[in-house]
Image (tube, rainbow, N blue to C red; front, side, top):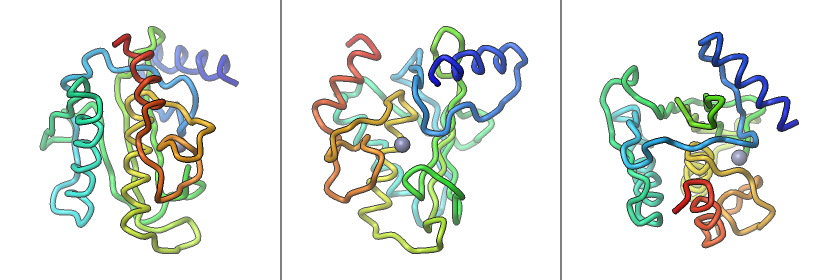
Length: 177
Ligand SMILES: [Zn+2]
């Protein structure tokens, strides 16, 4: 499966087509300049501030090795957030991350979608939404799923999940910290 994705990356990159290549999938690559990831969050949305807090959480726990620089024009963004009502067949029901990765394993662009409701139209608690935001940002900076239930990168949402030392260790391995 992983091999297949890799070859798809190469194919799409050489064709220069912006196509969602991963849906929370494996082998997510890494940012070449993680201290200035140009990030767009739709302004004046009821989730705007919460999303900023989720980005700030990742910056803090990585001791500022990953910094999101907010931009007001999404065309100028490398990491784009969108708020939608529902994501059909989404990962963790209300989140989705799609990244475009080069053959050299660098992330060129990533898009994080956060929905208000599950695909069967159920509302979620604030805690659940925040947990999913942290999870999707984890994908957007290169983390894959884990098998540890309390890790933020576990595929099934649980409000007790947090960014764990093991998540940071894997991030350190990806970026060579
Ligand atoms: Zn996921």
